[in-house]
Length: 477
Image (tube, rainbow, N blue to C red; front, side, top):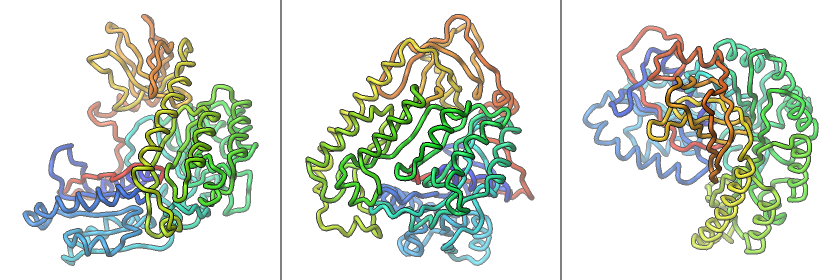
């Protein structure tokens, strides 16, 4: 969601006449799009702002803007801590950024605008995608859950759903531009439809994506186990372009901790979902999120998490040490764990999840996989002569490529045999006569400057200005 918003911010600024700065060059405007899920985001933001103070003194016309969840949370505190910041805007009004920059420049004072509810749905704004072949598509924003560790609902607000026709129209427009892979986005993507009273809306949306000609791959993130229903599993299994991949956040394997987190499911239900997914989609790769060190977590609770991890057999696991976030119920609990205890459990968890991921990857050896060649990651490595992309199940694949054959373009599809496996990626061999499917996404890449894979947007009257958009922390926020 955060990365998708960053693409919208880039599109808005280019639409307003600004140009992106080359890496390493000074910009006239620098935008921080922030996340508030982890405490590290706060530290990074204020540290970066402190480093910019001297630059602002040297050039008062240099503008700094701070947006996103951390801006929604801290609001005027940002200006108090860093009065040289020009603009602070929230998660609900990213479309206001160009006007706020103009107003700050004209009035010679900081502009702080934080809306409490959504102004314009992000997908209605201009965009500058980082990819010619893949795109994010928001189907909802906000969250109706009350997980005690999470600050997102108070910053993104209650769930708001787009109408299916709007979503499908956006996807069709993207496909017409050469996009062949889309990822449906929502804070709880599988509760889509709650706002207009259709509990089966998400499964219907997946099936509708299967009817869009030219759309090769459909993914979604992130669902919630409590609302994950069998109609969604059936839609995944029966829709040809929905990928055999599922990200299903666990957070904890302890039923007691799940109750304290207000996660509204238990480990037995969670594992039952995985069993039904694998029965319907045997080759599905399942990933998860896990939090270690939630307040009051005992060694017994932690062992329950390890048990569920071992039974879950995750292809990928995103592991986090609990981060105390002011404003969340969990932050007020008195039995916070010592840092050294959390760190030790985190390291033990990493050993287990990495070993399982490696074992699961080894099972891929000998299989023939379809790989979508990536943008910057897909360029041939001169040292190894390998290309990189994602398999249908989202595993990262490095492909040995013949030196005497022109490599495929980002967005093209390649079939290769897996010859080796590591915990985080696969190695495959394309063979002496590679099997390549040239796609419209590859054609779109050819039409652009090869040094920049960004999709151009229409611009209005040009200004002399360049921007640098920095994502402070990428996460599911």
